[in-house]
Image (tube, rainbow, N blue to C red):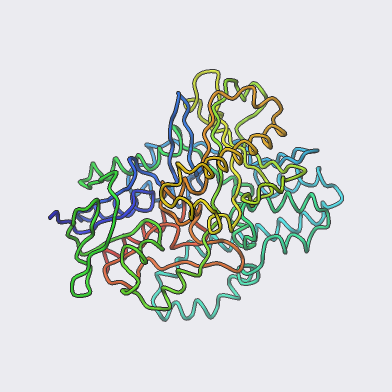
Length: 500
């Protein structure tokens, strides 16, 4: 029976950050990871000479003063990964106009005002309000109220509406509702809503996502997104940590109501402290077991909604996108019509990424990588008949394969509206559904960012859980989720383990 001080479940960024802090403190740490490489959502995979980023397409807070940069400096890794800022904020294309802005509020307002001149005054006021909300959000994140003593937390809560008035005003309001208060033009409302990515997103989280446009806070690591988890994993191992890939955690073992170990791939591993950097619902309801948890806690886990998953199409193109006039800026394309035959799609816009223009090593010479993404309907994974028909063997289910193919081809059809002649240049195509991401990441329903960011569904869990000796890291502990949340939660989890 192997013995460790701490076992971490999941070699995503949060688990790797936790592990690095713990090995630096002299702990014997094992990370178990169910797939064959690190990164979780922050993965990069290859085929036929092309490299595709699975679900993360740029990283915020990786510039000087950013949270990601700061933690990488703690590990001496800031010089090992080169981050290049995106050339411009995401463009928004309609069927009849293309809107491309520069970074900063003035650039965003000018680009939108040029496209919708009769709304220019309202645009300026709206983006000032968005920027003010974003600044309050950053102040709140850096304050880390979860680490306050009880007396300090009481005073913080008491003064919150005064110090964080925008957050208090907007966190339960849908971005779409706030946008409708400012603008009458339906096309402009669609453009602004697309910038929030998720359906029914809270206006506060909407402001967070627009840090890319307002602050130029979007960076791409040389070599692809997986360069970041690879660097963290290599450092962890060099400092004495151990990672077991293709090793799935199956159960947390208890003795006398205390954690005594875990079972992974049928092996019992002795340990008194477990950090789960994986899906929170499975951690508690499957690995730990409902009987170990307070009833109210279990009810919350079963009722809370998760963030929307995505359908993705990964394309290898036998042409140069740069020669066609593209610079690598992501695009949100809003087609004139969304085909109602595809109720599994929940978004109004198609995301188009061109990472090989940010890093030429991702595609063979003279060729390009194009990645298409579209949000799934919130109800898709709950109601999908494939789950009932095929269970865990869904990949061989004919219905599933037909749905996957139809949705993927439809997304290519939409992309060809934006990029005429796209199909004739396709060298390779790979389709991924929410089921794909659930299988690879373990996230319930393929959730892209932990819990839902809808205005009426904002939840998070504490890094310290109701189970003594069990801690959490990852996007289930922060809202909104994403890579910066993974870094921060990993650091907080390590601090709790070391002080607990």
